[in-house]
Length: 324
Image (cartoon, rainbow, N blue to C red; front, side, top):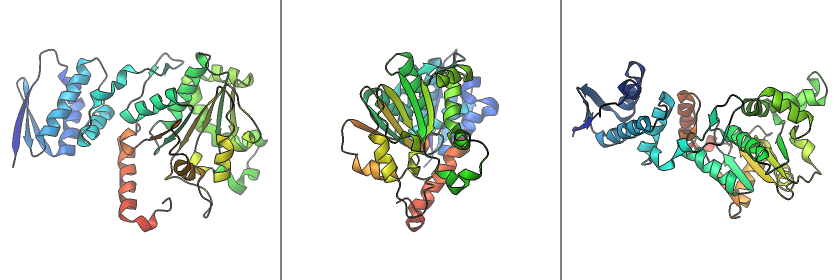
């Protein structure tokens, strides 16, 4: 049965921002919830079977605009996804939580409820696992939190590391010395660091060895006091490497482990250290586990759809899922 709901638009509301360029926001809402939306004078008329959710989305979008937040297509898509899951954007007070400012003066904030939970876990626990698909901001947020901790003098060093699994036997054929050979596999860490600190500042701190960006193999035998350690791409660690990494922590240190268990590049037969750690350590209260989902993807909207399609495929074809 078709329902009809009317929403009155208050004076002063920026309707161009609400509707989007060429009514893009309304079209996204109509496509997602299978409703018709008609503008009549100072109101919107919603027709369809899921009018209640559509009404909730529009009221949340109006609230975002009234609060002074910028409303873009990515945020509209995210609000729709939340409402479909019975959640609310306004419950998180996301836009009020500033992690830090970039070297260009831009405030860095969590963009989703999942990201906000991740930030809070990093603030409150010494070891945090950020597990989720590409585009959810796992590494970027961890780097921003590391820089913030250094600026507040909570730590004396920032150590960024990841396994160079993709190189395999090809590493020896790459040009340059060892550091030059592994640098391409550390590039995402450099990119995040440059964006937050600026290239010149980051390079100065690297020269002073305040910041270290190293392959995971370089971590063996070290004890790291007063350091903010980020282990990136942890799905490509073996169980021995993961245990080694977790036991590098010294006094006054914090360790963030990030990874995506759907992108394991280890040789067949090698078990991921991240998968094992999530099972072994799940009952230790002082360790935080944050599982980011496709709804937390902050890249192009198609990335979220691609991830969702893969998840559905492997749910329906469990025999083909190599990671379970």
